[in-house]
Structures are given as C-alpha cells and as structure tokens.
Length: 284
Image (tube, rainbow, N blue to C red; front, side, top):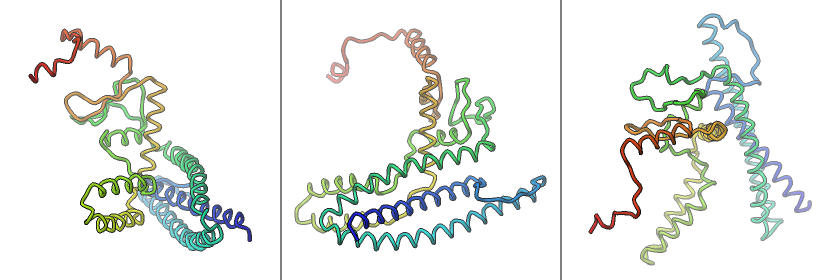
C-alpha cells in the first residue's frame, strides 16, 4: 500500500471521528436545552401535564441511547485511528509531522463549517420555544442587561450577554497549548539553571494532564456562536453595548443616541479639552 493511500485512510478515519464528536455535542446540547432532535419520531397528545412530562422523559431516554451508541462508535474509531497513526508514522518516516499538520488544518476548516450547521439546527429547534426579550417586562431591581433600543433580542442571546463582559469562554486545550508551552519555557529559563530541569519535568507532566482532561464545557461552542450572532446584529443595526454607570449591568443603545448622550454630558458639565496632559504637573 502506498503512503498516500495510508494517509487518505487516516484522514477519512479522523474525519469520521470528528463528525462523531460533533454529533455527540449536538445530542448533549439537545438534552441540556430539552429539545427534540429530528431523529426522534413519536407523537403524544401533549394536552396534560402528564403527557408533556412523559414526552420529556422519552426524549431524554432516546438521546441517552443515541449517546451510548455514539460513544461506542467513537471508541472503535479511536482504536482504528491509533493503529493508522502508527502505520503512517512508520511509512512516512521523517515527513509525517508535516503531513499530520496539513491534515489537521484541512479538518479544522471542515469542522468549523460542521459546527456552524449544527448551531443552525439548534436555532431551528429552539425557534418555537424562544421568547422575545422585553426590558419593560423585567421586574428585577437591577437587571443585568438593559435594552434601550426598539430592537428585540432572543432569550438565548440575552442569557449569553447576561454572563457579563468578564466571562471567559473556554477553548479546547489543543487551541492554546502551544502558547502555554512557550510561556512556560520562557518563565523557566529566567530561573536558576540548577532547578530548570525538575521544573520542566513538572511542567511537561501538567501539560499532559491538560491535554488528556475533558474539562471543556459543552455549552462553550454555543456561547461563541451566540456571541457571533450578537456581533452581526449590532453591526447591521448600528448598535453598541456599553457598561452601566452605577452597577455591573450592560446597556444596548444605538450609536447615534450614545454620541448624543456624550455630547449632552460634556455640554452640561462645561467640560473643555486640555492642550496637554496635566498629570506630570500634579505629580510634581
């Protein structure tokens, strides 16, 4: 068998594994959001509370069975991929790392498109259950998000925005591990040479633990998708998100209205522009 054929088999197997992971993520999201995927087919009257409760339990049970099947499929593909990886590394000799990086780049592009389609599916499934956010109906004394525009936002987008500007969306370890390694090595080199080797061993052990851990939250991909949706809405409608003055809330406001408020504040408080920064004079 030629090296090219082995690499193509490895690429196709890796693609199947990544697609399986994507379907697992989609099923988990449906389970978390209590949605009914299209592969579930059954009907109930749904007129009473008992009917709706039974429907919910049936959907969760069917998703759990699907997840069990997908995890078995994932395990089989992992075993096949492991053997193919060893075979490719043996036949390609010293150029395997370059071939591997090229395959990963192509597959990541395909994967981004796939997750975008799955997020669109989630949008369609949640469209009927989504409610429109209206700031007038918010009875909280200190709402986390204040909408000062005539535009309405879906409830899911609002829930993502209420996480706050300091919320950090998690990423898979593979996306940031290289930068982490470089920063760790740079910090170790500034220490005493006698203790550098033990610290490198500890750092390598910790990095392996990070790579093998599954601490990445399932919802993070959905949060990133929601943020991209909010950015598109803000850009198309000329809107801005600003921090509130007295608390940690955020406000959505039109750009023209924001500029008008700033100009009014400057005029009412008789603020003038200084010719130079007076900080140095005050310090002296």
